[in-house]
Structures are given as structure tokens and as C-alpha cells.
Image (cartoon, rainbow, N blue to C red; front, side):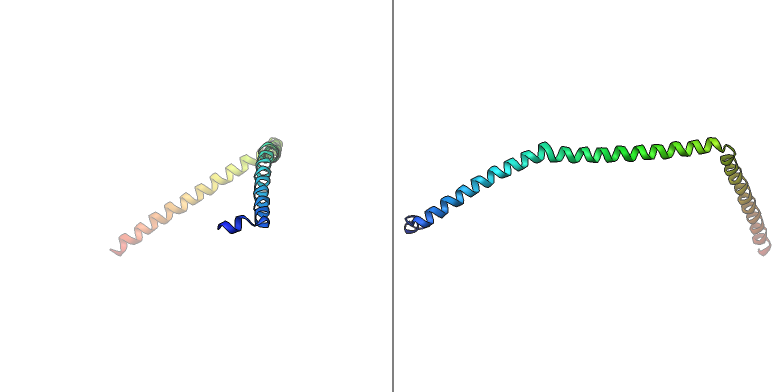
Length: 110
């Protein structure tokens, strides 16, 4: 600024008010950050922890119910395992049959 503008009382008043506003804004930002650090963030963290705990409790209850169902029907898992073994044996026999059959076809072609 030049020397004539510093003598202008209105410009000096506005400059003073802007300085005061910046000071108030700086104080408000400090209070906002302090409040956020002390109250808002811990409250949000508590909500996240509560949500996670309730989700884990629900999953635990679901798992326990599934285990109780397995105890009530003990033959059901055995039938699944037996069925898987039978399917594995069928798949292995088809593989060996095709492997041996394809090897014989290749030998006769030569």
C-alpha cells in the first residue's frame, strides 16, 4: 500500500476488522479441532467398535447354530463325505479308463 491509503480511516477500520475476523477464525478452528479430537472421533470409534462387536456376535451365533444342527443330524456330514469319496472314485476310474484307452489308440495308430 502507498502512504495515502494508510491515512484513510475507512481502509484502516476495514483492515482492523479483517485482522479481528482472522483472529476469531483462528480461535474457532482451534476449538473445532479440540472438540473433534476429544468428542467426535472417540464417539465415532465407539460406534465402529460396537458395530464390529455386534457383527461378530451375530456370526458367532450363526456358527453355533450350524454346529448344533450338525449334532442333531450326525449322519448328514458322513453322507456328504461318502458321496464325495464315491464321486472321486468314479472320476478316477474314468480318468484311468480314458488314459489307458487313449494310449492304446495312439499305439495302434503308429
